[in-house]
Amino acid sequence: MLRVIDLSKVYNGNVVLRGINLEVEGFVGIFGPNGSGKSTLLKIIAGLEKPTCGRIIFEGEDITAMKAEKIARMGISMVFQISRPFKNLSVVENIATPLLLSKRYREAMERAEEICEFVGLDALKEERAGKLSQGELRLLEIGRALAMQPKLLLLDEPFSGLDVENARRVRRILRKIKKEGVPALITAHRMKLLRDLADKSYEMRGGKLAEG
Ligand SMILES: Nc1ncnc2c1ncn2[C@@H]1O[C@H](COP(=O)(O)OP(=O)(O)OP(=O)(O)O)[C@@H](O)[C@H]1O
Image (tube, rainbow, N blue to C red):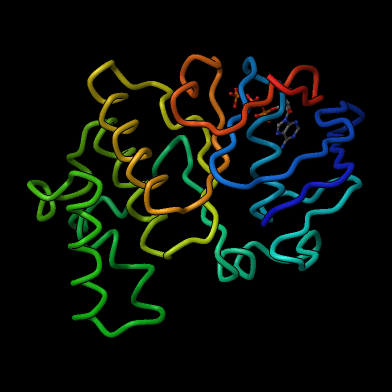
């Protein structure tokens, strides 16, 4: 489904990723300390950064030089650590917004309502997104990514900054996504956070990946 081949990234002479090789099938976890290059790898896959060298193949197609919008249209959705919703729109409207590019209003809203339920935001669907807590925002961010019916989800530290209860909620949603058969690449700063989710885990250290 996704193959990363000999990928490296250098920022101003600073080598952040060194010859990364990775295959993603099912749920794959990458753990490693802050600054080890996890977010950079996800951003490169999503087309938000360009690699210094190496290739990314998604469903047999070379996506390395593609723009982020095209990669998103091909089915790769990223869930960011920090959600930047439209604060004055409701939760359900935030989820519906990307859908309006390809669906009629009613259809987009119906689908967005289903997603609200799926991610556990049903009771808050009419609430302004600006009023959500950090944990609820993370669920909204996951919902927005799911709205695109992704073929692959990239989740950048989905548990960071959450208390135990919210981390549990996110874990529950991720298990449901896994059950639905959507593959995912998930980062975390500790392996423990991915243990019961990832089919395969890798450790990122000094820009290199090792099987964890
Ligand atoms: N746009 C950029 N310009 C220069 N250096 C960058 C840029 N983005 C990231 N870096 C550097 O690359 C290194 C890896 O950062 P990255 O965010 O990928 O790590 P991470 O493992 O995801 O850590 P965190 O969990 O803190 O996000 C860091 O040293 C960071 O300072």
